Length: 106
Image (cartoon, rainbow, N blue to C red; front, side):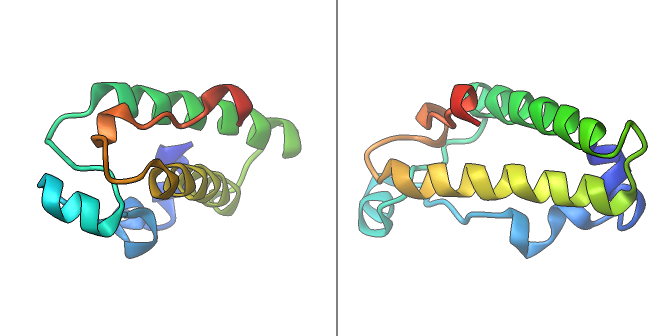
């Protein structure tokens, strides 16, 4: 899905809509009430991959297996919006790798 989404715009995932600026220290994380970013985050990344796979299945089903670039972009944006809400709700007392994206309820 990501590869198809980027066919329409190679910088699609690097645009501002996809990011949440996370603090890199506990003081700023507490002040912003956001998780701290400590570098690699394999648990978080694994959850994002699972969400993308779920969403790709939904996109394929909704388009009878023939999704457009726009369909793929919309699917990636839905995953990003879901993740952003979970990140925002996690608070400042954890790292990004500790955020539970709620894959089972997506």
